[in-house]
Each structure stands twice: as structure tokens, then as C-alpha cells.
Image (cartoon, rainbow, N blue to C red; front, side, top):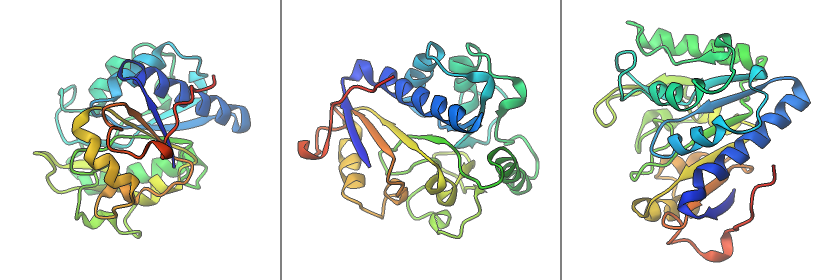
Length: 240
């Protein structure tokens, strides 16, 4: 894992620069790119940066890492922020936008269908080019909570959670997250500093520490990084 620290007001722009590099390279190599976005507090600044970034959007498939079970356009939906912050501003073909089907009455069957969709867009190796993740103050990532049975290595690639902070959720699981070609955590705020240190130290009681992708990048603002050993971090600007 590479750890990078930037000023709070640069966090979204730096994340967008990294995402755009990964997507351009995937399109250059394979003619298409796949990315799964999370919601959370850092997503808005990432989406704002991506709206102005140089990305070959017509060749990109956009998926979700997780989604709350809520009505269409509800503010709790990650899709609402994704649409307003990014999709309304970039030329992604509608057929390349793949929301999680959390309005389906049979949610378990809907999760299985989303897994099949993943196989279709990844040809069918289930390797996304990039997953964008956050870390909760309890150490959850995607919608994988501490103690969840979905943390098992044999979990289905897409699954429904029990109630988590008031809502059930559909989420990608560790087999998908750890199979991705690249991952970017975007974490800001002093309230995350302790959990970030535990994740970096490899505390497997925290779901985020079970994402073991070696090429993953942990992008932090200075407050979130305040408890880390400075020798383990970098402050190198992203090359675009």
C-alpha cells in the first residue's frame, strides 16, 4: 500500500488525478475501463475533480461499490451523489452506468444479478480496473462492517448486509475488492486518524485492513494522517 498525504483542500483534486490516470491507462491497454465508486464524505470532492478531468468517458463503465436500500433519488442513496456530482457533467453513455438494483423486491436475487453484470463488464474475470473506497470511524469499508460474515474469503462477490447504520445495503465483498487492478482510499478528517493508524498497522479486526491489494493507495489529508509514522508516507504530487 502506498500512503500519500495532501492538504485538505487538495484531497479531491489529487484523488481525481489518480483516478483519471488509472482509467486512461486501462483504456489505452484494453480499450475500456471499469470503475466502482463508493459514497461517503470524500466522494463529492472526488466527483468535482473528475468532472473537469481528462478521462475517456465513452469507454468507461461505472459501477457502485455499495448502496443503501432506499427509494429512488433519496439523499441516503450513494447514486444520488454520483449522479449530481459526476454523471450530470461527463459524457458517460447511459448503457455504461450500472447502479446497484436496491429497489428490487428480492434483494438477494438482485445482488446475484449484479454479480453477473460484473462478470459481463470485466470479461469475465471479475477484475475491476479501479475501486474507490472510504474508511468509516468503525473501520468499515464498502459496506463491510466489523464482525460481518461477509468478511469471509468465500463470500459471494456481491451481497446484502444486515442493517448498518439504519439501512440494509448491497455491497461488493472482499473477493472483488482484492481482485481489482487498483484501489484508492480517500480519507479525510481528524476523526479518522485513529482508525487509519489501525488499518495501516494491519489490524484485521477492521474490515478495511482486510483489503490487501498491494497496489492500493491510501490518500489522506493531514488531519487523517496525524497519527501515522511520517517515514511510511509520501507527499509526492500525482503525475497526470
